[in-house]
Length: 205
Image: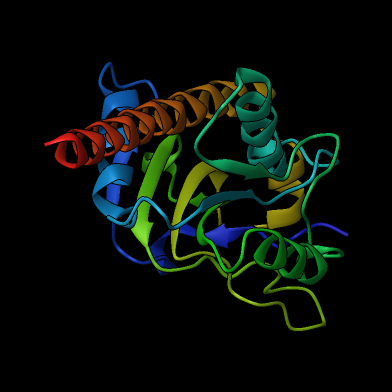
C-alpha cells in the first residue's frame, strides 16, 4: 500500500533549495544544524518514509540507503530500500525507533508533489510530515523537523503521477539530500569532539 503524496503548499514554511544548486549540500546541512537540538546527548534519528514500489515515493528509501552505505556515524538511519517504512508498518516502526533510541529527535524525510515550477525543490522545515492522508486508517504525523522533495506535479491522478516520476530526478535529489545530511552528521561529530576536548581540558586544570 503506497502513501498518498503530500502537497508542498500545505507543508510548514521552511528553506526551499533547488536540488541542482551548486550550494545545495551546504544549504541543507546549514539549515539542519540550525534546527537540530543543541544538546549533544539527544539522539537524532532520520526516518526515511516511502516505498520502492513507486518511483517518486522511493525518494525516502533511496536517501536512507545512501546514508546507511556511507557509514554515517552520529545520526541513526531508519527506512531503506531493503527495509522501507511505509503506510503499512509506519506506526510499528515509530514505536520501535522511539523505544530503541529512548525518544529521539526525529528528522522525517518524504517525497511530495507540488507546482510545476517547484519540481526539484527540497524543503527543510520545522514540524512533522503527515503521511497516509489517503489511507483509510489514521496515521500519526512524523518528525520534529522534516525534509521533503518535490518529485512531480500535483493536482491530477496523483498516484499515477507519483508512480511514473522519472527515476533520474529522484536519484539526483536523493544524492543531494543525503550529501546534505552527511555534511550535517560530520558537523555534529566535530561539535561532539570539541565538546569532549573542552570538558577534558577543564578537568585537567
